[in-house]
Image (tube, rainbow over all chains, first blue to last red; front, top):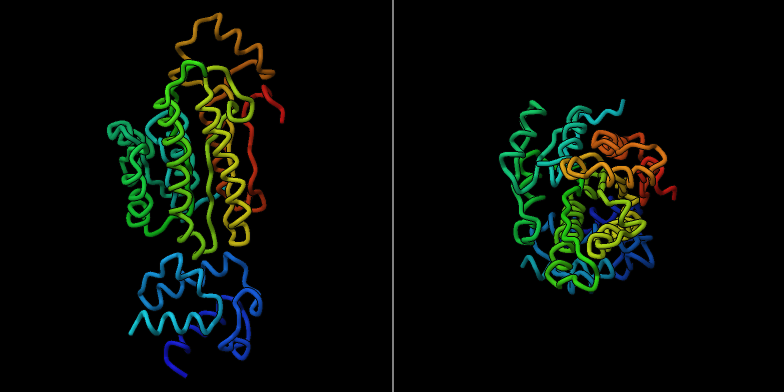
Length: 78
Length: 245
């Protein structure tokens, strides 16, 4: 498990109050982890702060699953 | 009665009338209050009346570049922001058939578009801290309409609708978004009315007097307080009964 994935998982678990085991590669924030659209905005805000990156709106919309977030942030911070 | 100790507020239009009284009332309840407006001298006077260090943040709300700096400046000056009062407003009255595009645009820009930008700007901080109060000073004219004020009425009704939509979005984060719709409030403008005009106005007000800026400010303090935590998307009518809605 990469460092990025650990950090993303920690944010998701804390923010959505879900078990870490449920935060799998394909887990959709909205469909599987109980997020609403505002949660999704807040997750993106939290990712931006944790990784000191700017996530533009169109990219934010493409981040639907835990795997999407890890892939985006791995690329953005590499 | 309502304790705002430790809260940090930003009031626009704090140089005059209702805005000045709102700033004073929030400060009296314990809040730190940043004062924004266009007239620096008048803002300094407000600060002196409050008697504490109030960040003074001059801003021309018709310039969106300036508007977008206002919330970051307030947050930097006070270490965050808990309460936003969109009080600033202007009129450019004209009958519909004579109203120029500029008169429409200017009023909508200052009264509504600036409020939209400020509302949007405070959300990130308020969502993170899971507490926030947004209060828009609308008008009975936004609820009832008024001849010669198509632009003003549209902006003030727009404020109410915008605040209701936002109230839906952020209620789960302990952020309330409400509006206050004052009726006729005693001010420099109403001092200039002649006796006949005054009589005509009073005949429409069951309370048979004009309201005071303090009576509007008291509502802002209430809506900002924890006592009003379960009130959101509401419009508080402060009009002596002239419109019971």
